[in-house]
Length: 314
Image 1 (tube, rainbow, N blue to C red):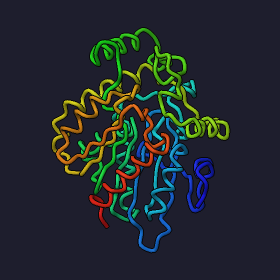
Image 2 (cartoon, one colour; image 1 turned 120 degrees about the horizontal axis):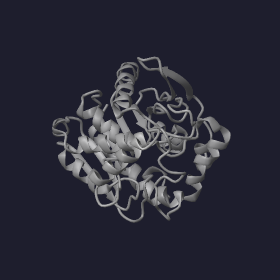
Image 3 (tube, one colour; image 1 turned 135 degrees about the vertical axis):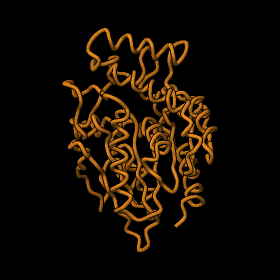
Image 4 (cartoon, rainbow, N blue to C red; image 1 turned 60 degrees about the vertical axis):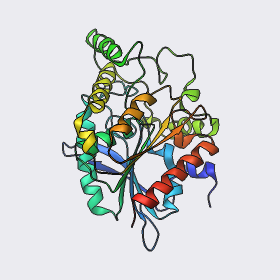
């Protein structure tokens, strides 16, 4: 068994990194690690959040791969190794969240046809939000889905509606693709980026370590246009009637002390899903549940393993 740090900072044997071409010709960087088991357990498509890179989750991929799962992930359009949508390579931008969904739906269709079942959709933060939207729009029909600290609402002064209006005004006052704030994950906070994401400084340090190895995959703050589109997309999902029609069994892990996304909104969406199990974490967990200290991370992985054993059977 490889050490934790080796797993976090080394591409595993048997894995590959390549590019997938979206229907419009855009190239997305992808990671594939086929199961080495004689009888594969199934396949997981894992999607990270805004600004994420799949390297951040290599340690967790080891956990599932050791159980016989085939693992795949790709960097969202405009971040990681999937190009940029602005002249500033450190600003995350998107024209609309429908673009993300178009990429995801097309990728899912090809991926599901080429990998062994059962098929599991997983998403963290923005990835969890987009997976849920894909389920609601029937762009993907996995056997099970896991949403980790999903972005179902953004923290904003006074209310989400007020925050969205302020973001719209800011977007229209200049270049919509300019950075919304300087560098932190959250504007107007005294919290460090580390404390917003995890209580584990070693796991936190993996991301800047990978940035040093591959400077081209580093991303900074979002654009004002991204902020507006995020408010729009999360608002629409929270009131969507399609959420109540999702047939896929869902496990949702929520960090109630999350300072990046609103846990209350995720809990609300979990209540709308017909077949959802909600697991809550308290002050012991920040936003990145799967990159937390061992007691938190192990509990999360245990909940996911139990869920997949029951709901994503071979």
